[in-house]
Amino acid sequence: MLFLIGAAFGMRVRRSDRILQARVFGCAALANALVGIGLPVWCYVRYPAWMWGYYVRPETVSTKLVILVFASYWIPFLAGYAAPAVLERWKKGAFWWGIVAGAVCQGALIGWQWPRYSRVGTFDEFESGLAVPTAEVGFLNLAFPVAIAVMAALWFAARPARRPAA
Image (cartoon, rainbow, N blue to C red):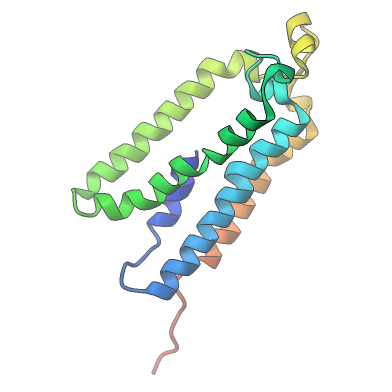
């Protein structure tokens, strides 16, 4: 997802327009900060065991490691943002195949993890079968539409300025 956020905005950049480059990157960085990092951090604060996929007890994880993990979310975002410019030199089809491959991998990962992510609760609630379905967790139901709205607003804000007709 982080790579795709970066790539979506990276495709908007015209290499010859420095002002547009700065505006697009600013919008892209804000989108990643809010949707790509802010939303997962919010979920982690609410349900840390769920974010770890119930593989580890959150209380055993160092706060420094958690910060490092979330800070590393900038890496795939920046790679995605740079990908259109880098692949511009190659065939454009390579970029789109990369997007498709990334989406398929993301879907496969979600599918593989779904038995764990389909229930939300503490580590002990999950282990005892008392974790609730994700559909019953209000903020998760709102997360996707809000993320799409934020991305759309920032995508619109990153558009090239229309010049008045002469």
